[in-house]
Amino acid sequence: MTTRIEKRFAERKAEGRAVFVTFTMAGDPDYATSLALAKALPKAGADVIELGMPFTDPMADGVAIQAAGLRALAGGQTLIKTLQMVRDFRADNNDTPIVLMGYYNPIYIYGVDKFLVNAKEAGVDGLIVVDLPPEEDVELCLPALKAGLNFIRLATPTTDDKRLPAVLNNTSGFVYYVSIAGITGSAAPDATKVSAAVARIKRHTDLPVAVGFGVRNAESARAIAAGADGVVVGSALIDVLRGTLDAEGKAGPNTVKAVTDMVADIAQGVRSAR
Image (tube, rainbow, N blue to C red; front, side):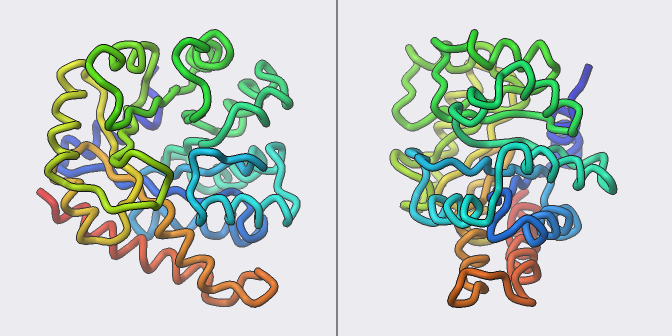
């Protein structure tokens, strides 16, 4: 059975353009604002929505996403509430793919089998769990695939040709290429190097390759989209959101609009790449 993720990448490929993936943190800065933002993202130009699962020790994340996770946790966000947010999103959007991205600990505590059943029922399409290597596929990857969820793996500039087949094994939906060595939001990617890296990955797999980490505006998104199947933007959106919060970290009247305005701008960059 084709998942929403696979369908969306196929649709955009047929249209001759890259997929635009947005990342926001579930519950940042509060449940209602986060849900309103998620619901507004597709109209602004997001093709796939990644929702972060807040966690207390996000080792792969830069300052912006770490802070977003802490704001969400302070606001009472839990994995149960994140799944509820997906249900609430699905109440009026059954087409946009949703990927949950985060770390294994909250899923382990929740219970893998229970989580996969609840995630599928809620309308989740895929998972990115950054701290589970291929050697641990039996923990979550294989059960997720059996449950009908895409399990999306990260490849990095340091993933050489010897390691790549292991990374790609059991990966589905798309491959997430981390364009820089380091944490999220820490540097700008070199479009030429990224294009070469995407081509190398594609020699090993038929899966689409989406590129993230360091894409911060329409110009950089356009450059990356020219040589990739998808572009992921997260830290830049979270920075804009943070800039709208008051001194106590509460959302303002412009919070959702400020983020969706940036999404619309970057979406234009992605769409004009080819």
